[in-house]
Structure formats: C-alpha cells, structure tokens
Length: 223
Image 1 (cartoon, rainbow, N blue to C red):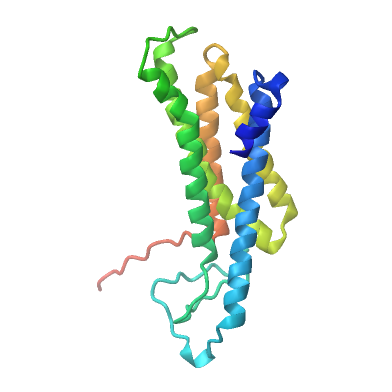
Image 2: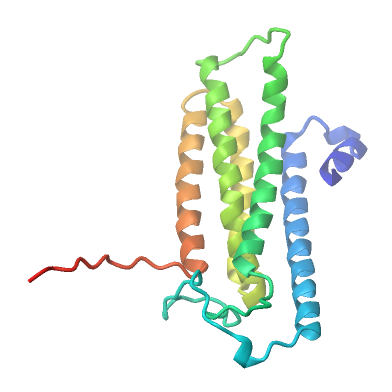
C-alpha cells in the first residue's frame, strides 16, 4: 500500500518501473524488520510475566538436536518448556510465508487480468512462454521470501550486519533483474534459471542457519 501511495504521489516517475520496484523492496524490508521488532517485544513481555521453574522443564520429542558446530542463537533451547515462548524459526517462517503470498499475488495478478480479456497481442519471441516464465519467476521469488525471513530474523537477533546487507542486497538485486523480462530471448529464460539457482542457494543457507544438519544414515548389520 505504501508503494502504491508513493507511485501515485510521484507523477513524473509513474512510467518508471525501476522506481516503484526499488521502493517496494525497501518498504518490504522495513515492514519485515518491524514485524521482527514486534515479535521480540512480545517475547520480552512474556518472559517478564511468566516464570518457569527449571523443574517444570521436560524434553520435547519434536525438538531437534542442533549441530554443535552450527552457528545458531544461544537462546534456542534444546528442551522445550511446558509454557514455552515463541519459536523464532516458526515466527520467521510465518512472516516469510506471508510475504511470499502477498508478493506472488501482486506480481501475477496483472497477468491474470490480461488472461480474462479482451485479447492482448503479445510482442517478442515466443510470447506463449511468457506466462509460464512469469509464473516460475513469481514462484521462485515467493519461496525465496521464506528463506530471507529466516536468515534476516536470525541476523537481527545476533546482530550479524554483513548477513543483513547481503540478504537485503540479494532481494533488491534479484527484484531488479526481473526488469530484463522486457528483453528478447534468452533473457527471460536466463532470469528464470538465475532465480531458481538463487532460491536453492538461500534454501540451503537457511536450512543450516536454522540449526539443520545432514547426518549419515546408519544401517544395522545382523551378525
């Protein structure tokens, strides 16, 4: 909504997609940080109101055992309390999923409007592939939002400024790269491949940042 208001207010730049795109990404990151700040305040309030004795703690079978070498926040307990506080990874995942749904709907709703008619002549090479590539681009960008939220929430907690800059710059850069969809083939195809590779890279990073680990399976041999 803020991006729409800014786009409507700045009349001379309404035709410049890059202008609206940059401020949309920046507004998204500001809202993401404000959501994280709100979550932290809520958790701080819960910690001040709720006192859980150590004797009331019991192992949680759903809790994973974090890799000792994994760089995760120290306040993530391996034992869950009966009156446990907010789960940081779950909060980040929920925020990322919300951003993903909003972004995907916003990016693709214009194409759905074009599909309803009247007929629109498509220009350029292989116009029929445009809808498929646009759908894949929206999918990869939306799924990347989940990884970005997990990484940024962790970076905000641990004050890892380099990771903050890296993730936000990647969000801004990949969003700006979508402008090359206006170019002829193979630019749209290369962009789709770039978004797919970027999504997989951030997915792996977020997996290990959240405390995930890959352990070899042990097969019992009968004697």
